Length: 151
Image 1 (spheres, one colour):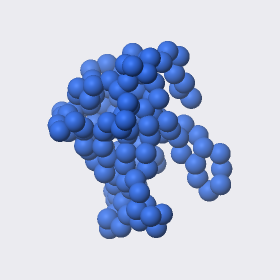
Image 2 (cartoon, rainbow, N blue to C red):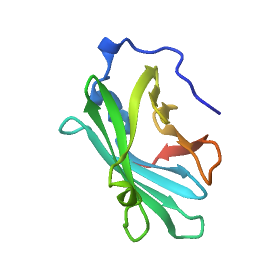
Image 3 (spheres, rainbow, N blue to C red):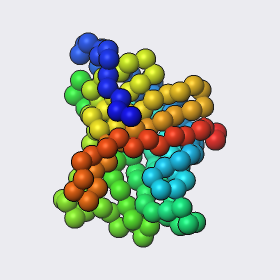
């Protein structure tokens, strides 16, 4: 399923204040990419939100980790992350060490559209994160990560 923004906020309304993302605060767990996944977000602090992600391999081990942040950039926001192997070697280190970035492009109600990643709030304790993923030379597809809030 591909989610596309229907209504965009006028540029003068971007970015939404980081406080609009306070609902993310806490621990989320659910189905990820080949196994259970967990995301944890801090409360908004110092102008941004930080968090981490754990993707299990489906066999009781770790497939990979992410460190992430949602922070202002110019007149908008960016969702930024770095990937790490189970031994904490960084995926992005081989490509200059820069984080993967998803700039905010639109907001529609409880949908926050970043370029390549969409957060969909589905009630007080449900979240779906759609991530555009390309593998092995195949075209990118939108992959859902469906979560329930643990706390």
